[in-house]
Image (cartoon, rainbow, N blue to C red; front, side):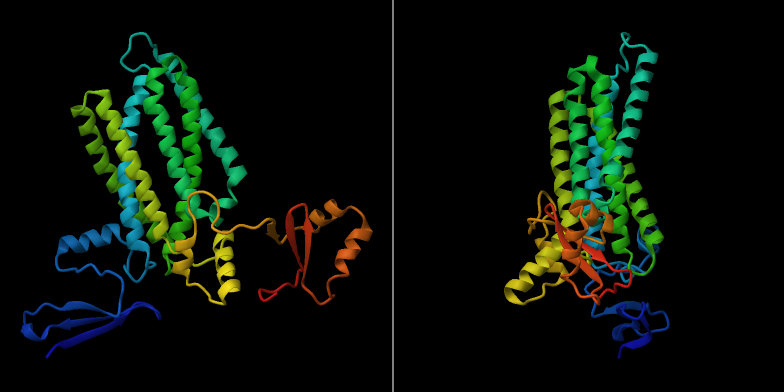
Length: 363
């Protein structure tokens, strides 16, 4: 008969795990086996020290109960895209150095240094402007901006590897443009990665999940860098390098698309809210978070859209600036009871919701 040694549960809502000795191997030297009960998550069997060390280095403590259910699928595709991105990055670095004249007697060190400083300056400026322009949207559409960032990064590297070697006299302008694009990628990619990490960390273990994600990416980048250098040293024709870059880029975009589609966010943004409301108003049925996330478009546009922009928590200044006169403002106010904790008013294709300072979530 199987002998149960311990019964363990990770948190109040975690999966139960039994530590047992199988019935056919009960001896003084028997191995205790970890058996999950009613779990859809994959448990890594810790039968030897190598696997246990791998889990401790690359996976959050308490995995899989300490992360969301979509964590493993997302990390698999994220690892694949990181590998492809590093390969294309290695090929691009070769093209950049060639474009700025490394190895050429016609280019002096000063001109190459000036080009490098100017491109870095353009990148810093682009980073500041993009953070000001789109910073507030990165949380709301984290999946969409994550994909956009990686596609933009591929476009920048494509320009560097295909255009830069052919237009070396304009290398400074080209590098300033591509570095600005990569700076935007850095802001969007970093911000959305933080949002997705926060989603995956379900036990208040944000720092642990983030650090293990960084360890995974560093390991993948190291391996991919070695592979990239090997490919550069063995492939000497431009045609093969271009073909390799194109294939790696397509795989990178595909892996990114699969990664963001695998994420099942449990909070509303505009797109997920409209999908849910449309289904509820049509059929009276509430969709599950997984179904809503599958229906959400992560490429271009919205799955469901409104003719007006809805803004919640606007300042009264917005209302006064639009209607100007006290008579028009009073006409709006008379449409609401004094016990209401909000006012709704339309202003130039925007539906504004103005909240009372005592407004509650149920309002």
